[in-house]
Amino acid sequence: MDSPDQPVLTLDTYVECIARGHAFNKHVLGTDHDPAMRGLNAFRAEETKAFFDEDARRLVSPKRLGDDLFIETPDDFAHYIKNSLLVSEHTYGYVDPRNNSVNLYNPKDNVALHFSWKNAEGDLGTVYRYERSAQRFDEAMDDVEDIASLRGLDFQGFSNKQDPQTAAHTVQSLIYDMNANPQNYLLKRDPESTVQNRVLNNAARPGRDWLNDEVLRAPNNVKGHSEEYAEENKLNVDPADCVCMKQASEGEFNVGRTRKSLRSGRVFRAIKESGINFDVEPALAIA
Image (cartoon, rainbow, N blue to C red; front, top):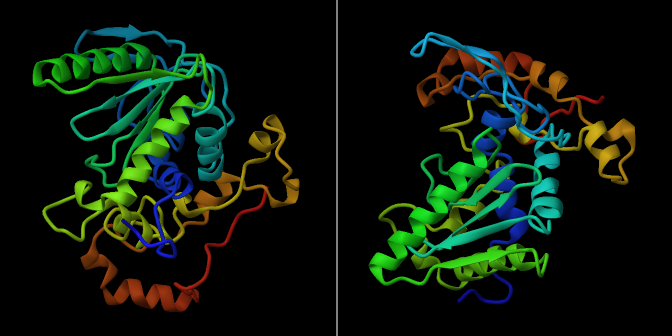
C-alpha cells in the first residue's frame, strides 16, 4: 500500500494516457488504416468514407458512425471521457476477470472505451468509434463472459442506467487496486514495470515516450480545447486560448522516428539551429 504522501495513479492521469496515446493519432487525427476511416476524425465524422473494396471488387458506400462530438484536441478527448462517456446513462460495460481491465460502450455516441492497461501500444487503453462498434463490443463481452464461466471466474457486467456513476466507480476500483497492489499490474517481467511507474514517471508525455513519439511538438502534447468543443460543452474557455489542431500539426518539428536518428549529428544541429529547448512546453497554435 502506498503511503499517504506518495504520488498515486488517479483517474485524471490514467485518462490523460489514453487521450494522448495511440487512440488520438488513429481515431482523431485519422491515421487509421481502415479504408473506411482513413483520414477521418472518427468523433467528428458522422459517417464513414466510401471506398473501393479490392477483394470484393465493389464500391462500399458510407455507413453511419454517429453524431458530431466536436472532439479535436487531447484535452477535448479527456474531457469527453470523464464528463460524458463515463457518466452517461447510456454507458454499459464489463470487467474482464483475467486482468481486471474495464471496458465501456456508449450506444448513444457509438463510442467504446477500454481501460486495457496491458495493451500492445503501451498507453494503457483505447477509445474508438467504428460503424460496427456495438457489434464488436457485445461480441467481446459475450466471449469474456463465456471464458469466465469456463474458468470459474466471476464476471462483472454493469450499466449506468440506474446509477450514472456506476461506470466511473468501476474504473476507480481498478485504479485503487493498481495503487494498492501494483505488483499485480506489471507490464513486463520486471517488478518495477508497474502501471503506476509507467504513468507517474512519464508525466510530461502521458501516453507517449521517445520510442513511439517521432515528433518533438507532437499533436498529442498540445494543450487546450478546440473552440467548437468548448462552445458545444459550455466550457469557460476564452476563445483566444483555444487551440487549432491544424496549425499545431503544421508546426511540428520532426526529430526522427528511431533512437538512431535522434542521436544523429544532423538532427541535433537542426535542433540547435532552431533554438528548441527540450525543457519548455510545446508552443501552441492559437485559433
